[in-house]
Image (tube, rainbow, N blue to C red):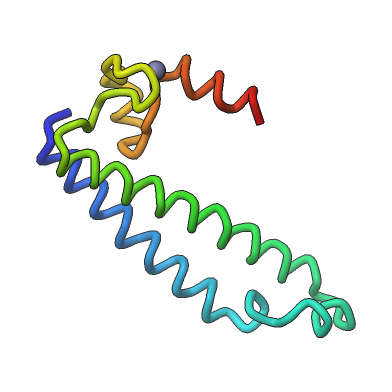
Length: 110
Ligand SMILES: [Zn+2]
């Protein structure tokens, strides 16, 4: 994938994430504080919205990092081992920062 289409896809993802995060943050269920949610019956809705917000925020950060790597010219290389990230992986996840091996190692460490 060339840098231009990678950038286009990342910017599209960023716009979608910004919109989702805005919706989640504006959702009264999502922003209701815990004490109020504990008293109500929709705690699971609040939890789900919060979980989605956490995922979307982390994803947004990954997309921003990928755009930064595009600017720096290091996009497409694993941030851990510096080997090229396989094309198919970038097609599926343009924001991927690591090759499959390094990502797997990182996830096992957690
Ligand atoms: Zn790697």
